[in-house]
Length: 506
Ligand SMILES: Cc1cc2nc3c(=O)[nH]c(=O)nc-3n(C[C@H](O)[C@H](O)[C@H](O)COP(=O)(O)OP(=O)(O)OC[C@H]3O[C@@H](n4cnc5c(N)ncnc54)[C@H](O)[C@@H]3O)c2cc1C
Image 1: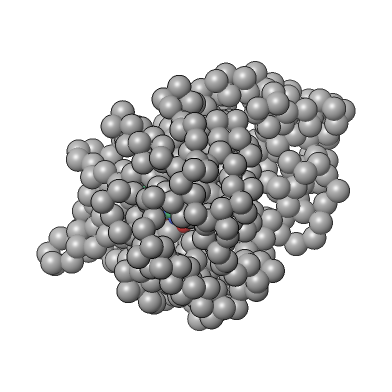
Image 2: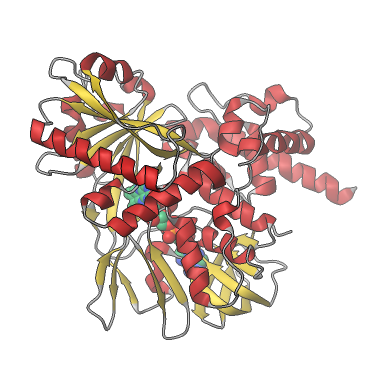
């Protein structure tokens, strides 16, 4: 069985496929390749989900926006992949999210009719993708009282009613990446973090262990560059001009009892909406922007002050007491790739679709697409490598935790599905602590427990406090919550180290 571990000690000299980058794309490729019988080494320079994959809106889209742009094939692909995630591969991590478009002064009747038509077309896509109405109910019209019942913080005086539709929402984008990577490891993939590829050809890579500085050469039959906005560093034909998308983080109490996503039209656009998105952890996100970015790609992009003001300004008219800057407890930004391929006229916004390119040195680059469509991107990539005739299995292969039930506490079940019991049993064994210690949240507002932090180190390759708070859990999105959860993360690391020391002496 493969493992997820930091560093490169013990890696083989030769594999079938090296996957570079462990965002959702690389994790998906690793899973697809290993389940077709190929030997896989998958690496990330930092950590699982270090890049764009943890900065998304955390939606599993049914393709409505592509439909509006006339891109039927992509819309259909999104709807199919959404159905696979919600009904087969990750029902534990993707839930139905009700999305409400309030009908008020900002929604003239012509735009209301257009939006309703779009939602109906989205429902046709759902049906065509064989996603049941139990998974995603049909859209419906609400009167003002019904709309206010779902989002009582909305302004009532101008409200005529609402349009209610449903889409998929991830428990947490980083958790999907970690779960896909762990599933790949369970089939035998070797998954390594803190492992930077410093050069690559189609026949192998040179790697640097970021913990020790040691260099390694690994030969391969194929090398997949899944490094997202950094793809140009390994394939000089790929030129990316990223665009930044920012979300704000609010406490749930800022817009109390908001149980649905609220869609607020962006003034001056006929089709774009800002979204207020309630999260499973009780926070609210407000997103999102689209700002071209010049210059080198930063490790962690930073939202600008203008984006914060823009988002607050757009959503303000929808609420009785609009959120202000004082309510913004955090903000995060991710970079979308905009691709230019040298030597061709091709220039495409890959936030919508994915591309698979082969460099002059034989590296296969896969870039663009969406979290929603990661499985299909991985299938297309492994098909393009031409290393095996084995068919792709991932459409019917549940991710770890997807099958079965668990009697473990709800917070763990939400994040680990049927594996919640394993999380609890592992943390009991490693720490010797009682469930009271393992399951008490860091604070009422920070639902992070020692049990999941310990498991993150023993089973998910977490190495330090940042891995634990920024990618295995999301306490780090709010500075105040990070400070509260840091002692718990440090304690988890100490407990695991102490367990390993005693196991080594035994
Ligand atoms: C603001 C925003 C919101 C979005 N919202 C949604 C949404 O709601 N739903 C949806 O479906 N999609 C959404 N998307 C799209 C989705 O997030 C991305 O398409 C997806 O996360 C890209 O994943 P990736 O694995 O290709 O790249 P990344 O997640 O960036 O992964 C690349 C990885 O490569 C590693 N790496 C880089 N260089 C090297 C090297 N030399 N050696 C080893 N490792 C290296 C990095 O550390 C990183 O972890 C959104 C995108 C943005 C920007």
